[in-house]
Length: 248
Image 1 (cartoon, helix red, strand yellow):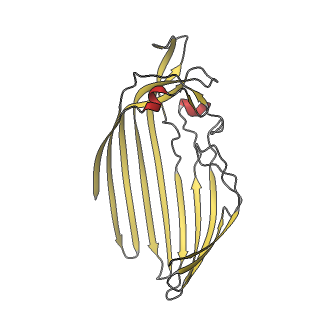
Image 2 (cartoon, rainbow, N blue to C red):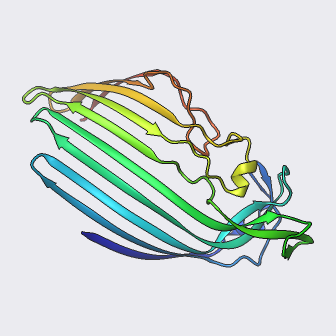
Image 3 (spheres, rainbow, N blue to C red):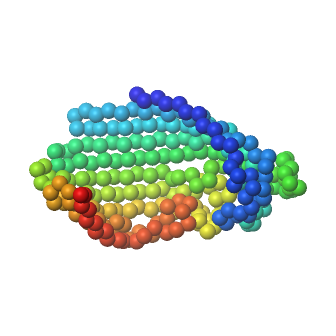
């Protein structure tokens, strides 16, 4: 059992206080922003027995006065900077099994959820007046909240031989739990969220002596269309990698 507790503090940076632009957004300087405060608690469990190994952790971060950016008008690029409270929580699990001295499989799972106070532009009925407009406080996901992921790997490394091979499968869920700002960031995030995807990979290598290693890999074997959530750039299609390393 591995319990952990951390406290963090971040004052507003010069960028937070004085910036006038950000990717896909127009800002106004705001020197009234409060410092951010975070309290994180985490508990983990790790062990191994009879060929099995496992590592599990659960965490939660309580957020106070996080600097958030909310759209001022729907469909517009201007944003309002303000402080908001909320939380981020998640689970991470890794399980491995040695089928034999040569075969090993692993599966890794991750899940994250969160909510932070944001300002929904509602000039007609919003109860909070800021800068001549009215807003309604709402709880939404923090910017670019990562989706659930699962990764499976199987590795074959023959005992007593100098080569190995590995198969991998990465599956990423749809990222449609968006902040107010993410909903307007059309250059980085599709209208209904970043689609789910799955990527297959093959890798293999061989050692030549103690200093030289040759590695061959095929990434995205199925040539899937995918984008890492919030990156704004589509990932590469099927690609082949050859590497030769030598240490002196």
